[in-house]
Image 1 (cartoon, helix red, strand yellow):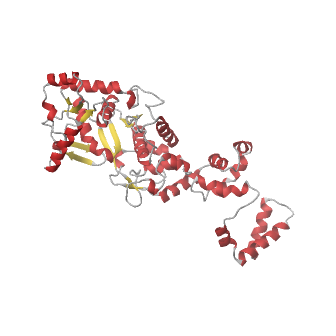
Image 2: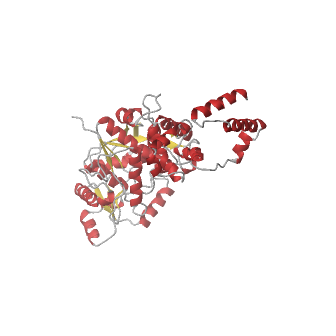
Image 3: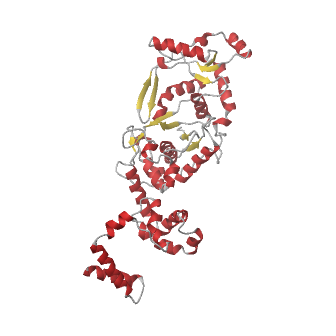
Length: 440
C-alpha cells in the first residue's frame, strides 16, 4: 500500500522569507497538493540569538500572501505538535536516550582545545580533519562515572565502522555517493544539552513521518549525516530532492545587490502575489517547457518533481515585471480598482471612504493605467493629476515633449478649440480633438 506523501517546509526565523525559501515552500506545497499529500510547516528556531517571534510572524504572513496554506503547523495545529523546535526538547532527549540504549551514540569528553590540536595535526599531515574517535572506546561504566562527576561532554553518533558508502538517490540530481570514510562521528547534542541541526531535523522528520525532503542543494552536504541518524534511530529514510541555486543575471547567487530578494520586499514594490507565485515556481520547474502563465490551481494540480531541472535558475527581474503586468491586465476593473486604492491612499491622493462611496468612478480609471502598469507602484504617479488641482511637470520630460514649436502650436490650437465648446462631455471633446488632429 502506497503511503500518502508528507512534506515539510522548515524555515529558520532569523530574517525575512527570501525567494529561495519561498520557492522551497512553493514546491513542497504544490507537491503535496498535486499528490493528495500533507504539507507541514515547521519552525526551526533553535538559533536563539537570531530567531525572533517577529521573523516567524513575517514568514507566516509572506506565505499567506502568496496563497500557500499548510495542513499542519503554527496557527493550525496537527497530530505532531509542537511545530517549533524550541518546544520539542523532550523529543530530542527521548531520541538520544534510545540511541544511548542501542549503542549508536556515545559521550565525548574532548575539550575544544584538544579537538583543535587534533585538527592541526591532521592538517599538517594532510589527513582527514574529522573527529578521531578518541572517546568511542571508553568503557561505558567509566563514561557514566565521568558524567556523574559533572565532566563536560557532548554526545556523538557512533557511525558503524562497516558502513559502506552512503548513496543518495536524489529525485532531482540523481545518484550521489558520499564515501563512508569521510563521515566522522559528528556531534548530536552539545555540552549544554542543545541538539545540533542534523540531529534535531532528523528527529523532527522521523516523528512527523516526513516521506520527502524537498530543499535547496546547499543542504546536500548534510544529507549523508542525516541518513546515518535516520538509520541509527531505526527509521525509514525519506526521499530527497535537492533544488539548484537561484542566481542573478551575473551568474552569482541571488542577493540584495541584485535587487529585492524577500517576499515582503516584492510586495512593497507593487508585485501581485499571483505573479510572484507563478514566476518563482518557474525558477527550476516547468509545466510543459512552453507555458509561462500558470495559475495557482494549475500548479496545485500539475506539479511534479520529475520536471524540476538540476541546472541553476536565473532570476530575471525584467521578465518578472512583464509577468506582473500580465496579471495586472488580467484583473477585472473592479479587481484592479480594489488593489490600486491602497496605493492611492498611501500616496495621500484619496481615502478609503471616498473609494467606498464611489467605486464605479475608480473602476473607470482602470483603462488609463491597465495597459502600461507593470507594478502597482506605477499607478499613483500615473493618476495623481486626477486628484490634485495643480500639475507638476517633470522638467526633462516636459522639455522633451513640449519644447518644440510644433508642440506649442498644437497645444495652443487644442486650447482654442476646447474653449469654444458649448458642451463639455466626453464624446464632444473626443470628436473635437480628433477633427483637430486631422488638420494639424
